[in-house]
Amino acid sequence: MIRPTDYPGVHTDGKTLYTENLVPGVSVYGERLVREGTREFRVWSPRRSKLAALLFKGFDQYPLVEDSRVLYLGSATGTTASHVSDIVAQGTLYCVEIAPKAFQKLLLLSEQRRNLVAILADARHPDSYSSLVGEVDVLYQDVAQRDQARIFMNNVGMAGPSAIGVLMLKSRSVDTAAPPASVFRQERRVLEDGGMRVISVVPLGPYRGDHAAFILRP
Image 1 (tube, rainbow, N blue to C red):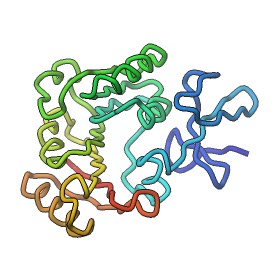
Image 2 (image 1 turned 180 degrees about the horizontal axis):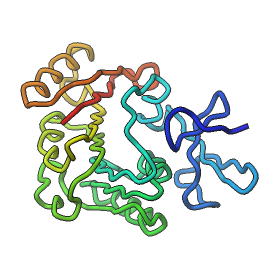
Image 3 (image 1 turned 90 degrees about the horizontal axis):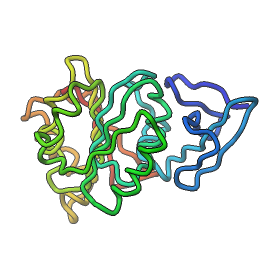
Image 4 (image 1 turned 45 degrees about the vertical axis):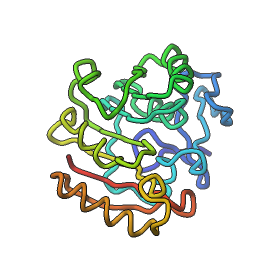
């Protein structure tokens, strides 16, 4: 039996995570659909989504609710973004992606999902989309670049006064040779020196061994 978790909008059967499908009958990336009564749920695997991995590891400052406004930097083709779209069913999800090929799939997804806005842009230059986005409740980033922390800080101007930030940091994109733990400490200093308050750093192993989720107050 699928039941709600302590995370609003996220469900479980005791082993697997699910979100309720905003577009019933449509599988976004080949994920399994499960019907219970009149409701349809989508399997959300921590092997496919770093946000799902964070939920399995424990997310004490989980910020998403039904009407959240979310800025998602590095949305790629929309795998994780589609689950966020399910969760913020009455909110708005702004998805920024720079790669044209991935953006084409993201754009198709936005045509199916009324709350998802696809933006073709470079997250290093938020001035190109900030007027469209406005103020958000959640700033979420998954950009595999060397300057990940700087990109995040460049976008905090759109975060509201009580916003939560989630930075999915890939250590090998910062330094291919250094141990991940060393890179995480280094990038934490960069964020704190830039005025960010780091609430927690959650390594995502065993799902993603070289990744950690930085939970931030911009």
